[in-house]
Length: 193
Picture 1: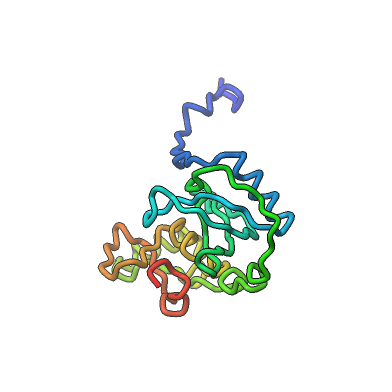
Picture 2 (picture 1 turned 90 degrees about the vertical axis):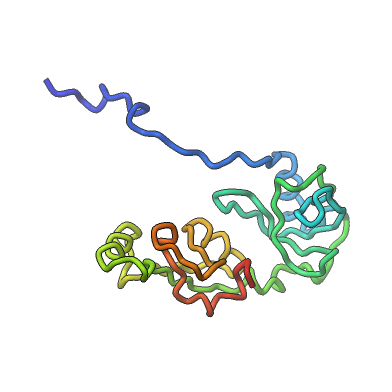
């Protein structure tokens, strides 16, 4: 007698590696979403590698982004006078919604967010033809390329998700199975720019 699907303990057949649980507090997300909805700024203490103890600033967020690995906001920074990404787990205190609006924070002025770019990802040419064919099949590539359309400001996150190394030219084909074939076209959107 054959075992039916209902007799199989699925939990014994699947193992999953979970992403790290970064410190993203729900109360911070709630306050940020309120600021986005009201089109107002938030005053907060933000920690970064250059300021690990944090510094106060006013941000004007216009979108909340889940990169798959972390949550961040795309916001105009009053301190830096430009649009940037801010990791929610680096917010050191509870933001406070301000009653201020800055006309420079209009999302239509965020050119990196509003620019749609095409990423052309291919199998690493240092792999053998058979290995390249395997990678092309694995990633369901059409005409030996994977074309991904994304916002300019999201390019680094897409490349990180696909494990495309753009930071160095010393490609190890076993580690760097995928390459960005139009690197020069999108260089201004990568973290190395």
